[in-house]
Image (cartoon, rainbow, N blue to C red; front, side, top):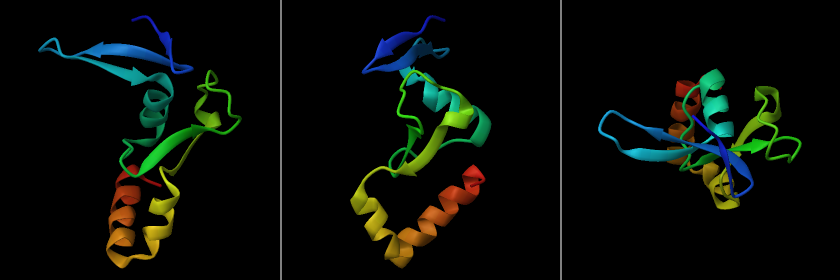
Length: 91
């Protein structure tokens, strides 16, 4: 498996048994390997030191995808959904 730079991030192509290829970013794979699956529709994985090539697990953090997602957490239904996601991820 060889890695390449995609949009400034290291990535790899992963192929499943039915030969469907999917590009995955290394920092996402590293974070999920140590912390569990992340719902990327609401959350995103960021580099603490802003160095896109430093994929050390200690350098990765999770944050809200958009400011509007952060603001809407006051909505009770949204808050319950986020608690379920975070509970599943062990955060």
